[in-house]
Image 1 (tube, rainbow, N blue to C red):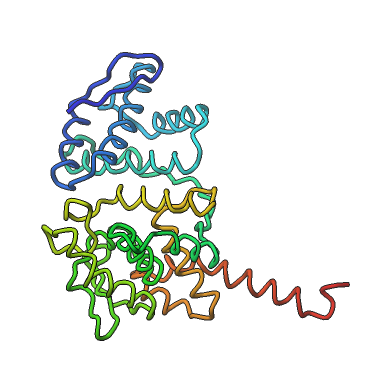
Image 2 (tube, rainbow, N blue to C red):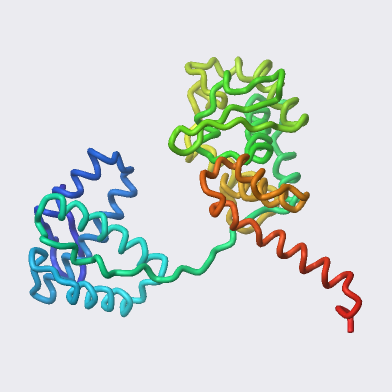
Length: 307
């Protein structure tokens, strides 16, 4: 495995410590190709900087790291990218300590930059309705897409949960979905009557026409389970057809699900359980909806708001 960089116009930069670490995260952690490429690029950037300054990775100090971070900021690296970069370095330093390559962690004083809170992108109720109404339910693919869109919004599913769902995960008698979230954590999510009706039609009348080769709920033309990329492309196509110009992903439906529940008066704890968040702080990002609603009510009804 090779780490490489073009930092400072240098040729490829390779170091056995970095190669060992990348092999470790590939085999032990099972990282995706994209994640591995990110780790490799971040560490290659550090190696390129060290080579430019005639420093050695073996002699890395806190002072050298601070010089490197100053270098990254000078290149215009924003806080979010810098935080990701630091995460890559910390992972490497932790491994290096385990291997006893360093006596102490050279990055133990590094602090992540403060990240601006990014509010989740969500659709209006009217936009959701427009997208869900688009698939032609007279065709097998259209019926599948309608059921898929209904479930994404009715249950607030992650795309991984959607494509991993199997036929037996739906109980038609109770209208409950069994969802396996992050860390294989299981939760039960109720879906409303319209979603039940559409899903029932798809499962009984449409899905068999795909000649299933697996028990995944949603299938492609070959009868195999859908992929993340396949679902993403479908969402993108339908949102464009609905006249929505901003970028929409499957996760946008999950954000919309949570947002509209809170708008309707649901409490945060209930939304947490439905989303499958292990920590309520992950759900609290949606409280901007409640704050906005309170502000609107205050402006509308306070006797001095129009003065």
